[in-house]
Length: 227
Picture 1 (cartoon, helix red, strand yellow):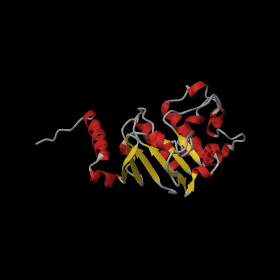
Picture 2: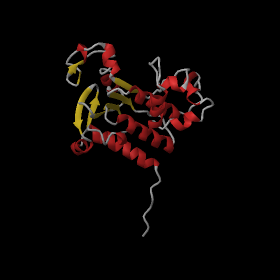
Picture 3: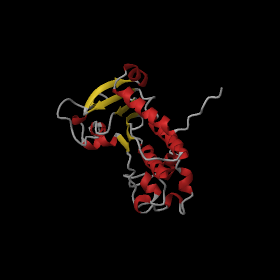
Picture 4: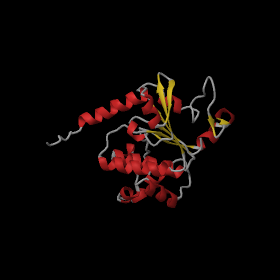
């Protein structure tokens, strides 16, 4: 539904990416249908469907082009002001301005001059510039420092605002505020609901949540109460 954030969770190999790939029509369902605002996607052209979708994936794809061209990818006549606005909203403006030629700096093959967190923020800036009403976010699993994590979280918050968002979630801590969480197992939907509803049901979602919680807890120093 318009403006809704839906998180897709499940064990590795459950079919999360396969399910989400139906939206940009990378393939069509053999049964049932996929609708966007009530319209069966098979009744629309591929180009019209994909114009409505922005994608931020785990593997950030950047090109041997300028920073501006990477943000405005797909547009032959980029608007520099919009590019800068998108970079600012993605918390990328500051580090791009520090490049030798600013936004006109060529990033080189695989943008090797940028850190992992900077690459992700540049990908978010590209999605903001695209300004599509639907966002597919394949949550990054790479380990980032705390500052980069915080900046990316704020950038994603700016990107998701006002958009229909599907999140392929790998860390359950990031999906608690989703309007709806869909839990997959072996290619089937086994649960659906809010975070609190799914925790209360004590099913697969709660088991996944508890496993991640204790994994984090075991790696942290536990303070010992005095007295």
